[in-house]
Image (tube, rainbow, N blue to C red; front, side, top):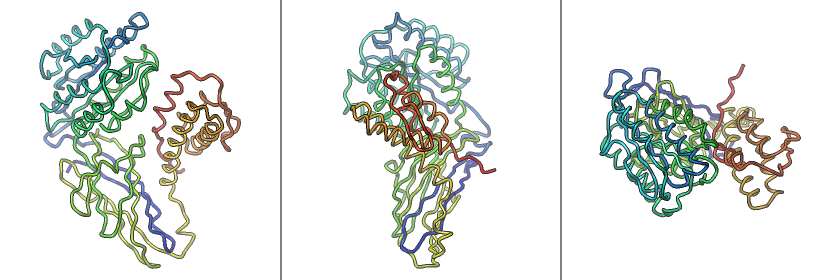
Length: 430
């Protein structure tokens, strides 16, 4: 199996009558991890599809958005490593394969030059139906099973010429086929819509407020994609008869629910797909298990943590439960569990606070966003602190005393919303 390891952080000691066990599982790919079929790092197992919005709205602002999108796409193509297969889709109310004329092509000096020439001639016109873009991307990726498949998707608008049911159906068809990093340009797109796509497809979502920021963002996304070396990794969890896995969540680098993604292996075991990994990459997961209550002094295995790579699994760590009447042991809160519990609450109160503000419930918005400020300071999430300060005036971060700002830029509010699920890792103890 590829070089992966996992560490479990928990307080295994439970007071009498308690049946819930929480643990943080840190999964790390070794520096030498590579695709199973390759002796060393390669790029011939990578497939990249770039989808750019070419609807009529991209021609607004005297064409600045379209010009920037073309420049960013050309920069992304130039960042593709030799050997990577790729394609470019132009999206309106339908999807059009802009390059190559059919299927996929392999990145080299000649194809990168040809693709750049084609992209430079793209024009903005038509509507927006994002499900058609995803459907065409899926058709391309289906041609290359057993590869690492990544999509970069850009839009400046909503799925106004599609419909929610069709979008949900296509997203479901794409689930497990490829990963997608979605970016919204400007402020006329829908955060929840793009988050729906990126969350289902194990990717990221973010705002690009201004066209001149697009080139650097595209380069960064492609550079990250080029580092992936292992495609099919899953967190495999076994729990004994009578135990119940209540939830599995990714909690770093961002919060993503994984419970609903469970793939049943047998009556006691399920796999939770984790997507593609790069050498040295590390992520954290929160696992909660309900176990049958034991007697004082009993020790039970709550879950066995395994990692499955290309279907081959190896045990890597254990989650335990030990019942004790020693309150010094049972009341001790594990710092990793406490940290990520706070990070999850932070994301929840930001989302609900912004929703209350949008609904005109300013008292609730003030309370919730004040709690967000307090949690952001407690957990050391400096990025959230900075974003919150654009929405509220902070009087006392320790108590969460804030005042809503009268005027807030739409882009700042959207940035706070879309980045609310990003987390920071536990500070190392000195």
